[in-house]
Length: 292
Ligand SMILES: [Zn+2]
Figure 1 (cartoon, rainbow, N blue to C red):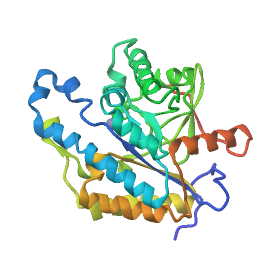
Figure 2 (figure 1 turned 135 degrees about the vertical axis):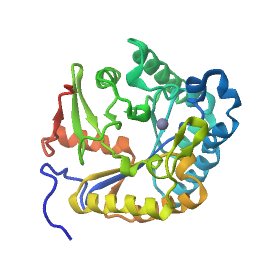
Figure 3 (figure 1 turned 45 degrees about the vertical axis):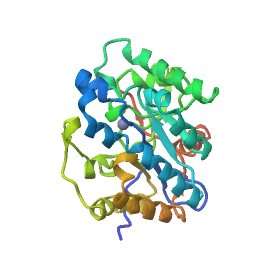
């Protein structure tokens, strides 16, 4: 296999691990339905049922995580925290990280001025109310719609990482006027919508691939990340990857990851570790000045 060193600024991952991996699930439920379809959302029963499959898949996933003895990250929109509190509480009960993902799954970079800040604070308030003062420190913009203002707004509110961008193979820095924010990058290849999502009710359709095809893509990305010491992040959705045949792929990959040699951890734990390595000078991240 290829021995060329692709990454010029490798992360000194925890002892014994080669690369890092994290499986994040975005639990969107039917948060965006009214926002996107107004009055007609009420009639989109099939679309709503497809989205609400999260209620079947999240408990299934939590059982798998418990069996494997692993903790991972769940991203929730604020509206879901308010309307499906029991699912958030089940994730917390399992010891998993809760991170934030918009209020109603709005496209952040298309909001009117001031709206982003208002909805971010509303989302944080929803989390604080349910989680008894434990403020999530991670963020992923819905549909990866990070705006130019988002890093500053997150830094001002004490977030330790964003996971919306795709600009590197290892963590890097988003430099805002309020300070630096760690970016934990992902990529379309590891997003399950790329492989499976067919939702005519949501005006969205791609070609359904077989779980083995998607697994082939995930594994190629994972193995390369391991060989070169990169960070691999899955961006998956319970209602997409939590369905039966696809769930078998999820279970296989997680079972393998739980055995090493990559470091498998929640995104917040990885962010804390990497921020410490930046602080002690042992990791030198690339800096994105956010200029367009
Ligand atoms: Zn989402």
